[in-house]
Amino acid sequence: MRVVKPVIPDREGKDPEEHEHFLYKAKRYLSSTVEQMCAGLVAPALANLRLPVTWSVAIDTDVAEGIVRVAENGEDAEGAGVFGRCDVIAMATHGRGGVQRWAMGSITERVLSATKLPLLIVRPPDMLDKSKVLWDAAALSAI
Image (cartoon, rainbow, N blue to C red; front, top):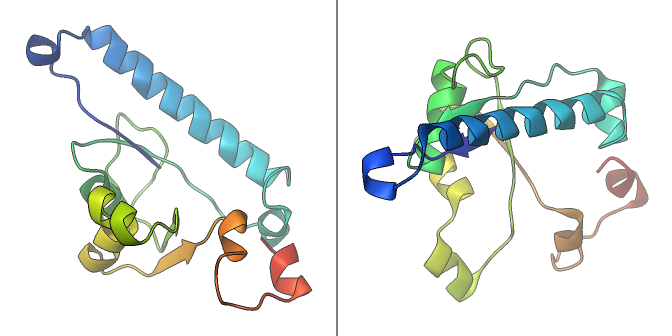
């Protein structure tokens, strides 16, 4: 899912059509990503499982709150893709720590503390090298 911040024309000097353009771009990106996943072009192990994958665009000033609201209530921006609430939330993490995490916060951590749904947290492949977890070939091929 993608959270798009609302445009307030009077305060930001932005055109409402620009907001519609952001929504359109977010919907197009997510739709294309899911198509690539289902075709096995991205995460081939996921394509083989034939799991239903949904996408949604939410309008919210807070990304974590938007994710939880959509996942738990099935709300989205103008029927972008979610039909009802989600069974699980899967999120990638940037793996920031220390000062970066303190300065930027952790959306994943905020979602984890705010939702009652199961949360699958996925580290990007480049973060696997930085972790202290030993990965076997089967685990790496599934990513």
